Amino acid sequence: MPTSDGLLTGRTILGIFAHPDDESLACGGTIARAADAGARVILICASRGEAGSTSDASLVPDGDLGRVRTKELREAADILGVAEVIVLKHPDGELRWDDVPELHGEIVRAIDRWRPDAVITFAEDGLYWHLDHVGVHERTYTAVRWLGPDAPPLYYVTMPHGVMRKVVEVAHAKGGAAPDSSLWGITPDAFGAAALPPTFVVDVRDWIPRKLAALRCHRTQMGPNNPIAWLDEDEARRWLGVEQFRRSPLDCSGDFVLEQLGEPVASS
Ligand SMILES: [Zn+2]
Image (cartoon, rainbow, N blue to C red; front, top):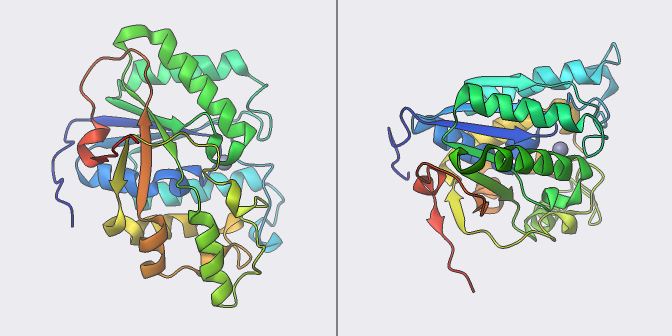
């Protein structure tokens, strides 16, 4: 197990995502690893995910998917060791266009309040060009830029291209997914397809049990039709065990906290 006990004691990491489950999918392992290394991890989720699909209608008996997904997020966050979860109520599906000044202001105030040593959000590609993710990237970028050189380092998380295709193949081999299965309605080849290369990666193989457990908390999103639901720990370690990041070139102050957990990627 990579040793990082106490490495981030006294540090705060702020993750800013769009929907419940983004945190676990994009960087659940890094969140858990950072929390284990002593960091206080705070999550902001810009929406309640109310416009998402539901794997099983019986999970949402009153039809209030946003309420159920908020609860799923809090369960996942507990497993990952997150100290605080802030769920905003911006409209799922409209994050790129609606409430732009409001979300900007909320992110600026959160950074003011929590004084994070690092901020993590989506990259420009929004993991798979999801416009809500792109919108949260844009709002976070402008908020950090607005703070100027005193801002904390801003990190973009991306997904390795090809990994979700492998996840579908693994599920298919077990009878759990058609070869052309989607993930949340997205073709697996879209994940990471438009991502710029990472500058460092975090090995989270030892945190895979918690990443998987956190993903499985998102029950409304993780029914048997989702290929990820078919992965066992060894398979997840192989395909979801590395999380990748790039630091924004924006001016910032402080040291580069997240790199302390990672290994640099040589640029080609
Ligand atoms: Zn999302």
